[in-house]
Length: 342
Image (tube, rainbow, N blue to C red; front, side, top):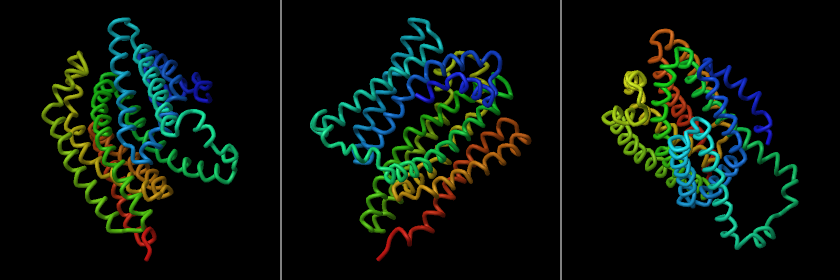
């Protein structure tokens, strides 16, 4: 509700921060004005996804994510190409996708607890106003929110800097950033597996299981990231053709395709280590490590962009991934004696 009420200030602030030009800003404002209505349902879906993953019911979580994105894709095509609603139609498709997925997720939760009446009886209403419990909850949320804010700020900085270079640079790199988003969907699976398996090992105080889970997720991460890198390296040109009809945007994206193609490799260890540390509930280290990585990234981006232009920004974003994974790995090894006792 707060986000929806702040739509206009958010439009003004984000448009300024991201460096939107006079021709890009109207489309940005239109998209945000519609998309912001999905905020309550996006947050509900995050809670549902966490609940399913926490119970190791990854298939249900995956099904809900497929529902969100499937509806989004189908309705985006319908609203844009049939109704010709443009940017507003693409935003509305995302809103509807999240609303439907939130409804489906709530139904699955109610079924798990034996229906609405049974679920209602199981709710400990006094816990909802337990100040000590709420403080613990929001302390955990605070650390993860700061971590996520730093991650999003890194991508926002990248977008803002490419936008300031020009609209062609913005459009070209926006396509390549979709390659990173595609990679994230696959690599996040390794992170979720690491979170569940390492969390169980910490709970059981059994270090061999922790070490094996780390090696397995990193090993399969190499396989998955290699497949993604090969797909982007050899099929990236065809994928770009599907995503844009503009020859200039195509040429601009192809110029930096190699940097996007290696991102699955540089990013994979960061996804896995993020899951390892989340499973071990090392939230403070996750927060501090992400903030430190972001600071290093900003310095590197400023220096490398001045030396190599947009290519420098791509080098910096890959360096951001590697720095994050390195900090998390070192911190995990340092904390292991405290995690496993006896």
